[in-house]
Length: 343
Ligand code: KG4
Ligand code: ZN
Image 1: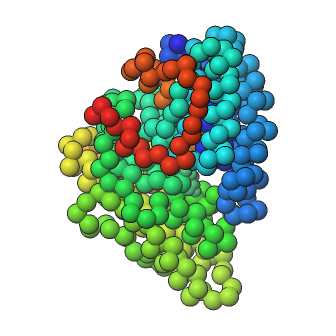
Image 2: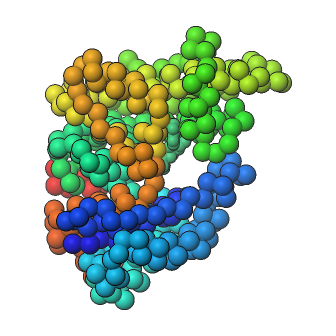
Image 3: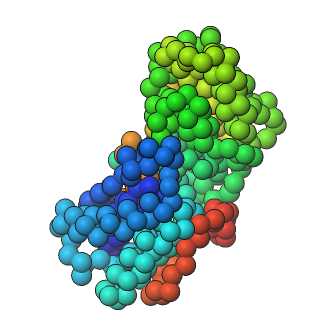
């Protein structure tokens, strides 16, 4: 079965062709980062317009690279939400029009389900059940994953997501958008003892997070440096921030593994690309004898492959989930818990 995946929830246009027999055949990505960089964040209207410009040429390119003819596609999976309404509508309208033209089923996929299942695209995928830490730009959640569509929320952030803490702090440090990769790079040569930032909710007895206080701590540190924020200070503050975020994320993952008795941990979402987080988790995994699974680097951040894959998994799990219903709606806000109907 061949599934076309379309991702347009935010600032990346991603297209992929996944074959349930042969695996991922091709995928392409166009990132709008440069377009939004000068505004310090994603401008929704610009994002939608750029998706409109890119989506068809990318679709043609992906099909050509896969060697699959349009008529060979069995189903189309597109990101239905959560995300920016206008951006989502571009992917949804292309998916539904093409589905109608080809007379094949179309599936609206939850973006976070795509992230959650993305480690299964790797050559050494985890078996169910596992714990998943979902750390994207807007979400920080710990989930228990028992199978496709069987997700239980164990804990989540009460305010900012870890990605937001990275991005907002980066802005305060005068770094470009998106801040995560840049903060991570600066932190590598920062002094760990110079700024010890708070570890919010580290000792709370639950699996929830809170990261909004960190940007305030970064703001205070920046202000204390006075008018001229030296480069080395930026490195040191970045190091303090990364250490605080990583400590909390690792501790909560450990608690989730302990609580459930599971020994497999999956990391999904953009912050999962963070080098320091990976190093800390790997060290902890060796010490506490659990295994960590990461998506391939290119599938950590938004991409079409994870959407094609999630669609294919849904089709295999429940063929009735794909309908020839081309009247689409998008869900800019869509709690993942709504998918957990068959736990
Ligand atoms: O999953 P994603 O690509 O998009 C959303 O669905 O939100 O995640 C984007 C987030 C941004 O906050 C970005 O700063 C962060 O992931 N990120 C990183 C790194 N790469 C991306 N954060 C820390 N270190 C990184 N290397
Ligand atoms: Zn994402």
